[in-house]
Amino acid sequence: MGDYMIEIKNVSKNIIQDLDLTIKDGEIFAFLGPNGAGKTTTIKMITGILPIARGDILIDGNSIITNPIQAKKKMGLVPDSPDVFLRLKGIEYLNFIGDMYKVPIDIRNKRIEEYTKELEVNDILNDKIETYSHGTRQKFVIIGVLLHEPKNWILDEPLSGLDPKSAFYLKEKMKEHAKKGNTVFFSTHILEVAEKLCDTIGIIDKGKLILSGSYQQIKQKFKEDNTLEEIFMEITKNDE
Image 1: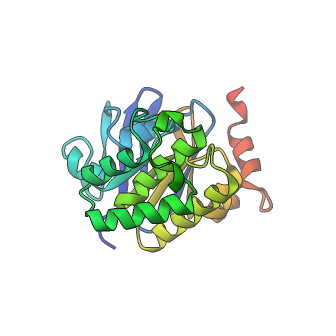
Image 2 (image 1 turned 180 degrees about the vertical axis):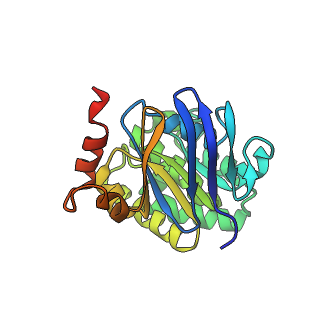
Image 3 (image 1 turned 135 degrees about the vertical axis):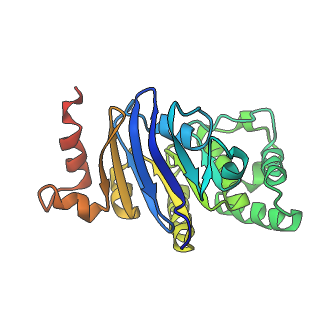
């Protein structure tokens, strides 16, 4: 299926030490770890928000260091905080994203209508983002990613603040996206979601990748009936 979607090659920065990871086409990858383990730092390096001290990250073969514009065109980010563009109205934010990624007006309008209805925010499109709750801001950031249909979704705790119906909708969209041969890279604290939803799991602790593989592969290294939560507690227990 062509290039691997996301290749993290021996990357170091702050807490992160020699992180080496490949996320393949058609994969939902869950990135797990305690607070402060380096999850958000990694996501910020993948997306070019933080410079990489050593190593490289390729998005569909494009280096985020030497070819950042091409790399960024291939991804959509839901950051760890949805507090962006607070003075814009919801519809202005979505049109701004549409303009940035050159989404044709007719396709854009159709998608905006569909996604804002599904996430039940179509009646507040003309309100400023600063008036929205945390969960509603999160929905608009998610719609921004859905709007331009990038091949690689980079989602930092995307379910935080979403109501159950919206969380279900996003999880279904993640599955659909991967089924089409695209990539979803997401960090989460909700281990049951990672267990049920993901093809591959990576567990990071103190800036180092401790384990990665499918849930079945990871389970084989522990007691057969262990849940992901029990495995996670076992390998991060010395953090106290």
